[in-house]
Length: 329
Image (cartoon, rainbow, N blue to C red; front, side):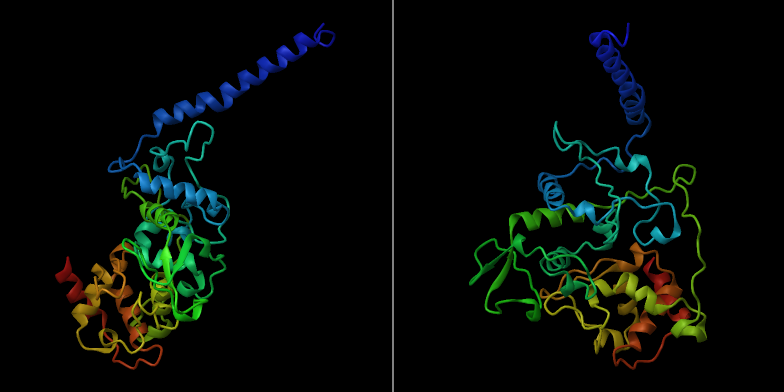
């Protein structure tokens, strides 16, 4: 009878489909909403500008190349303080009734994970330069340019946010590059991506497959980590691999009096606490604090910078750095 009456056949199929949808998808999703509450201090909701920036992120397909999920493996610890857990996404909401683009976790990493990019790189100036011409910020970047999010003007107008792009990347050196509202919204969204700190080891697992730090390298006589690797992972995106920085945005370390000079306390303070320099440069975040630098890490980075790109300053010791870091605590 089931096969002979199409109404019974289709009705049975529809009933089975609805039952499985409820049992496999809807009910577990509702249970997850009850179980996975927002983490403490995670009550912050995106502002109107950040929500608009999220739509720009979606419209431009950024999720195709960037993830927003830190996996529970040691190689991902450069992207976040800890592995992602379901509660990290508990505050997210649907884009609208028709689109469930609440979580943009992604599946590929042609570019770095963005879970904690707002803390790793809080400089709006850096993001704007990177969007306009990625190679101006990261020489080996494979990211496409998003020049269409920017406006060329002969003269700046009130309220314009100028992007100080290095001259070699400008098509017309007489023009001013100005960020469009969409570019500013996208940067606001990227800066909002910050991983909530949570230290309950019973809920948040430690990274798996930990590898011992490489020792020796170019600081072998002090048994330090490799300063070049630490610089590349934490500093090169702004100051560049060649130490020349980005004119008008990020200062050069090559020949810098701070790097080669004798004020070690200022040097360590800048690394650990950040720096708000002259108006022509972007604000530097507290890189050392964000990356949980030890005295050995700071010493390795400083010695790398003091002996690279033609710099020829005297190397420092871990004891000197420890004394200063103790004062900063």
